[in-house]
Image (cartoon, rainbow, N blue to C red):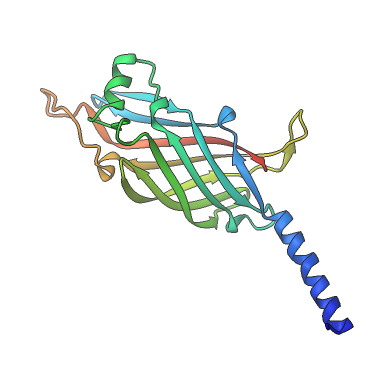
Length: 198
């Protein structure tokens, strides 16, 4: 049988473990209040913008230990919307995202660092069209915890990064008469994400 001292230590350990588990909560992405946006130069003279919905995933997060946060998320590539149906059809096809073969893109964190008050630098692996490359997100947040009208705890964050689409096998282009290209290689990405504590 356990001695009284051993029993008290065991009981204290259970309390601490339960407290840590409560703090390091699981937060689920709210797809109804989250979106991913992209922009890319077109014909070297203008910028095309669009967005993806269908963002899902989870975050393990303790507000007291933000650098220990971990996120696994997916984006439904079939939700791509640039505002022009013909362009969307091409971008969902084999020239770009090939959504019939690769309907989702994925992101998983590998490292989180503080980058100033209320800011984080989040490194992770981004997978597009079955190609995985490291990316770094500049994040503002997560915000303070708030409760919505239904009493659910929520946090939000925004993030930006840039990628080279050719790194993910998206290489389609057209050469202009002037020698330029129809679509730039660099793509700017921004995210607005809202999480609900499970």
